[in-house]
Image 1 (cartoon, rainbow, N blue to C red):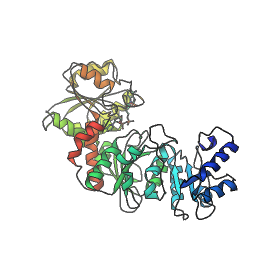
Image 2: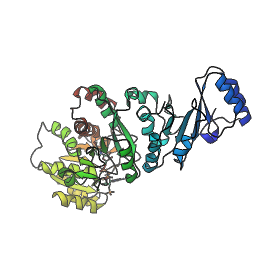
Image 3: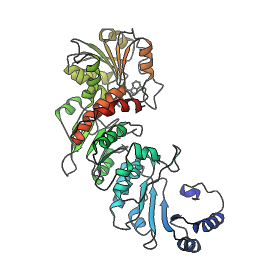
Length: 437
Ligand code: NAP
């Protein structure tokens, strides 16, 4: 019976609402949640007489309000009340401010949460951060922004096994909420009985995110679009391979400080399914066309170059194709008639590495002018949806296809090994491949 301005759906008068609350409050509820600014001594008396506890709540659907710590500290009117704040971080810097409130001394019992996708980790981490409970919606139509379903809380995030000492891992990116990496890593932790959880972190502001990572003492991170190159700054000591590729997809906290070591598992993840297709070794002189020239393409071209393949890079922005090709001794062209003409000499394998085909570009084929003969092996890096337009077209032409999810799982297995120094349980792979869609 929340007021509309607090995100609720009660559309009667305030008088009606209070009258209803008074009637219901004494009927055996354990908790009754009333708003911070509500002055209703009669109602409070009914709640107390009925044996219920008062949850005194404040909501902000547009930001983390300034001075939240002080406001939260004075929210409860007496030791039996439970203070609750549900606010909306719109940047990681704001999420870091919210996390500071968790560290402030105060009531043992309290509820603090960040709404929206940026605040999502605070919901799953309620038991770790010391929130008395977390809100979930039984359907995908969440009651508040960012709410998770109870099934996903338990199946994907193992909510009930999270505690104060649970180690935190995650994937940072933008967009990132679609990522299937939490499913892969959390299943692995569960199978091996490791006290850890892996979460998606939506990161619009990298500077703010480093503060979040320190506040949560995140141990290890997968890095995805668009931060793979940007993380190669002063915070990260990248290994030679990540420097060669010019992009980092894996970070591990170094000791207790705020610095990170970085590497890139995309190349290994890319090669694993390909080596399986070729029976363990890439044929000498393999001609490969790589579509795209972003972070993933760099890892792919470096991996192919290390095995002696001949590579042509075709990209929408031809300058980006040229600079990638120049770094690895490959050829370059645009996604145009001239580029597709050169492709004929590099057509044993075609690798699609652009983000076209992935949400929100599901309907986009990055190279509609590229005609398949049917003899190419076509390898798509986009893993959601499973079968992009590009893959559908190549399969129809008779090409053998390799799915992005195969690479996703292979590179995640390598990350898992780096994160927890244990092999990913092979017994989970078949089930995972079926589940990742
Ligand atoms: P990125 O660095 O942002 O690069 C994006 C690339 O896509 C650029 O070459 C860009 O061309 C091109 N592009 C974007 N929109 C396009 C369009 N409408 N038409 C044609 N080209 C377009 O991204 P990234 O890190 O390389 O990641 C790319 C994709 O690979 C993502 O979908 C990611 O999920 C996927 N990926 C999958 C795995 C896996 O394990 N399966 C691993 C890594 C990445 P311009 O240069 O012209 O902008």
